[in-house]
Image (tube, rainbow, N blue to C red):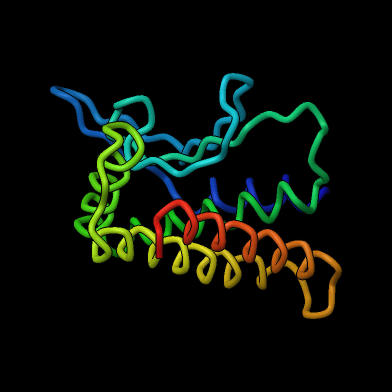
Length: 161
């Protein structure tokens, strides 16, 4: 089984989502959706406004290697772990992201640092998760480190920190 698929299966097994409706209780798995409609990958605390956290992965039609997809999924899962650890701060982070990217507002340095710090945490937690499957010295770690370095620099540039 390829690494990306193995990671995806593990995440789904670890997180059973329970939603209580009016008179029923629905139990399902943590959604990881591969969509053709998106150009980026992200974790959301409320997938399509449902109140259910999930991960959206761009279906790249084979553009990315399995190792790169595994790195991306690990990072996005890092965001999910951060959310599960502290939902209130994560809600503040999402509000700040909306202010910056949707509303095109300028963030204070303090606000920008909150978003950047979440990215650092997600990479750290993603690395911890990936270590469960990949040994030190495996070539995937070069991909991980390169993608992490590029992503964090992009965030610093976008946020002006």
